[in-house]
Length: 301
Ligand code: GDP
Image 1: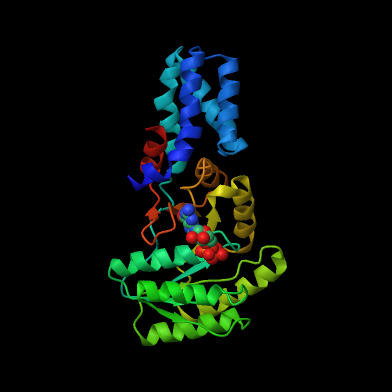
Image 2: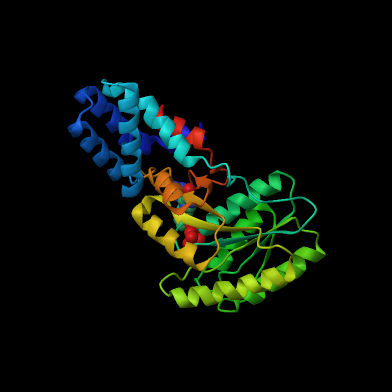
């Protein structure tokens, strides 16, 4: 139900308009497809994905000999669930008991990275894990303090150095501390300096090397945080980060405040990286595991 509440704006702009078109237009003709295309693109579903969806709808209309536009609603919802599902890639976090799990967070400033780390730390702690945070964003003013506030709120240790220090050194120390304290999950923050791809790559590579050297098969997750309210911009960021860091999953924040929820579909389809969590508000328990059925039910209800 959090999904339903959080996705009100997307539902209104997306399926609200689709329904309106179906009722108004009734007939399935070229004009109908064109308007449907416009609505889906405006909802940030992404041009490639929209064209593919429409092609699939055309096929269904032909084979099932449909004439009434309203009949297309369940078919559209089914197609979107299919797009969001992937049997190969799980939406679940790759966390196992009996080992130190390392989760690396990447993403540009302001997308909700720190907040998401706090929410995830809380969730994992409530599930019985011993959690630790590493303040690897030594670049942004206030990032370390902000992470400490979350650490206190959740009740987990935060390993930090001074602002401006080497993030790889912070993460190295955090790993040693996590090992000595039998931590289950170490969540590492990093700075998101996307404006300089070479810098970002060098910085991330150094962090990767430290983690890989200190913990076998780590990082177990590299989560990219994206702000849903930025729509197609989020998709562009995701493409750049995918080239730079080996991201294993996406957290899409601020879905609550936006009508651009269709971006979930574009990201899943055009990037081939699973959306693992969505942020549906600013509060500590406003982080939800992403479930394609729940998502589609929420916007089609
Ligand atoms: P960072 O710079 O990426 O670490 O971003 P922050 O974690 O500081 O978040 C930036 C702002 O976005 C803060 O005001 C957060 O409260 C807000 N925020 C983060 N996630 C969500 C979300 O899922 N929904 C809403 N509405 N706000 C969010």
